[in-house]
Image (tube, rainbow, N blue to C red; front, side, top):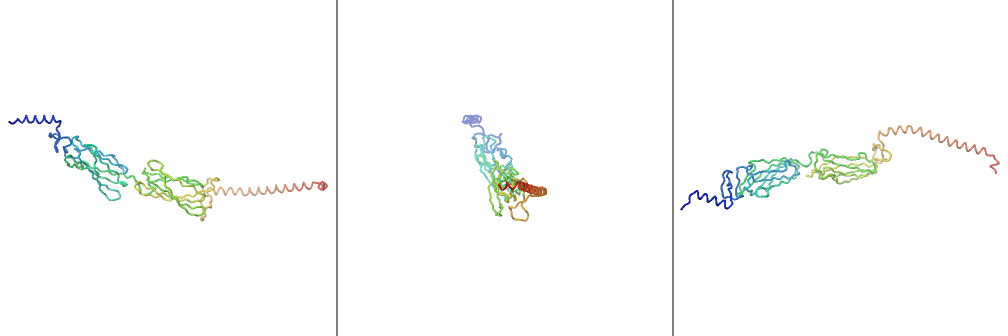
Length: 339
């Protein structure tokens, strides 16, 4: 004897309620087209496009070549579990040939997957990527249906072509006395990290001997955008030439121009600048410049007549003293001299 269809439908619904299984949309059905008997996670995509089924979150919003890019995808329906996901992309470097890349997503939980793109060792590039996500039945959902992921990644290396455009170089003091140290400082103009720098010098001693040397710079702040190095003091008459090489995190080397200073002498007597004599290779010979030569000439013009006057006055005093002594001897009686 057959039971009426109404009784059969009632019995089926009651059995579902007793087993605790609710109504879940079948694969490919719309939310208003539900079918019974499917467990959570064992259903496929409920919509036709990537954006309707999955939410995408990407951080940071502005990417530099110092940043890792984190992509998180999550199912918009908690009953739809993500089985697997992969990311595919292309990098377009500024100065070289494009190349592809791919990364797998790793599972955070049943409905959330995550992928991290590490920075590429390039100083600025464009990057595009898309995502493939798979449901319980390994049906692929292509993000290109809904989203286009494209980034211009800002370079974290040198911004310009020359050393002076990227780095400010200063040294102090500008006029160097004997045995005085010189501090050389380099500062990144665009807050670009200076990965390393060297200071090179050549110098000629007062005896004409040519020598050379070099040292590493020491960073003076956490971001390594400023560095300093000290040049040891030299004797008076030493001519020093120095230059700097610096490189960014991509090992792109920048070389500065040549800088030169001459070590002054007689520091305890004058603050006036001195310079080498012209037309001679003897670096031990120094002459003051015109700022001091003119006052010195005026002083000499006054001092010479004064010297002659004082010399003549001294001679007159000596002659007068001699005459006085002779006169005193003439006044003494001869008897007293015999006794």
